[in-house]
Length: 478
Length: 95
Image (cartoon, rainbow over all chains, first blue to last red; front, side):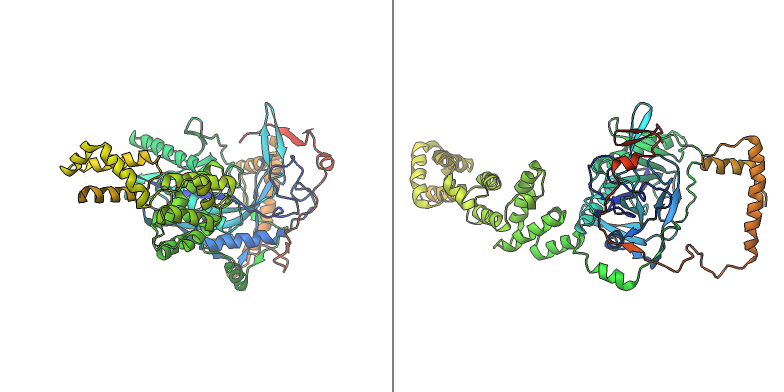
């Protein structure tokens, strides 16, 4: 690669408190327009905002989980601009004394960890929603004043893949804290990106563009890939890039420059006089720190160490907090030392079932002990084949019956006892004398053919491993 | 301290105020006086004083996360210059 991409991400996150940041209006999603508004969030003169204690606690929790330093003295500022979704004509945000600074998030790519710096995590409020029509716009202020965190990364990200991984890790980490549902579709997590190119190895930064309007993690990745291509072409053809804001058009799969008026970006920040500052003492920080659970990275490393799992398996199992809890219950109960089969069953068939039902693996109504029973029946006791196991698993989800019950009801059990298998084997040998001769003259494939015949005669219920052993013994002894 | 017309025009634009040439002249002079007055503060040495963002000695004013009733829709839209159903209506602006 001739150029190196330098990427920084700015994430806006809704906190899932019951009420808005500065008033007691509900934050519930999807209700009638303007049904969750009051004089404070509508910015009526004379109304006074009072900050939500839970928002401050959640914000500190996120800051700590992202390894940020929580500032002892922090305050709100007004960011002034005119737009119809902003009833006060300013957004309450933070400028020079943000809640927290200098953190980091470790992301894992191809078995290696990379540390992405977090510049700051600060508190602000969301704006309303505009619905544009032919020549008017309709305004819904239900979202106005919903608590937001802005999480700004350092420009430590160097590829679209890293950007994707940063977002996935950030989402997973925040979901562990139970402070936001991180749902990009509902707008509770949004992401803007800054990207510039420079010659590989260069120290100075190139001209950056700001990308907006991506509404999925994949959208962020695609927009960045497109922008790398576009900027490379401009630079290679000897052109000059201009610092502008571009919107991602997911349909056309391209970024389009936004028209911006000169000087429009003068926000004239000043301290918000209606909201006194916060003094956050060390004991408060320590108290909140105690409520932070084991986070995905630590959990992943512990799963590798305690259960001997691969990085890939461990990472997949810890992606969600509920899923990780479920997986660990299964891992603990599985009586074998090698826990790999448990990971395989959860990441494979169980995740597929959850995916088709749009829920988490832990929400399928299967208890860890039931899943482990099934896995042991398949992998250890070899009562049923792997394929039948998957059928049984689906039936368990549909009927809430145990694996053993389903196997008995559907008579799915494999035949493994040599007594009943031997008569079939004798039959097959009698009927396939040519293959028997082939095997004896050294054609190894003939064995598999004979095993296949036994499988067919038993309608697939014979245990193939046992059949193979018995068949080999029988042929070699004769 | 002098202030040029361009600056006054920019400030007027940011405040969404339209000024006529005569007003521009007058306000530029007035702004100059205001800034000159404020500038008197610069005789003080504030090098060792932390910037003041709030003058009252209070901090950590917080409320519990408990929902309260929002306004009924009739009241919310009572003074709206224009409305449609539950919505406020504004001229179309797309940034």
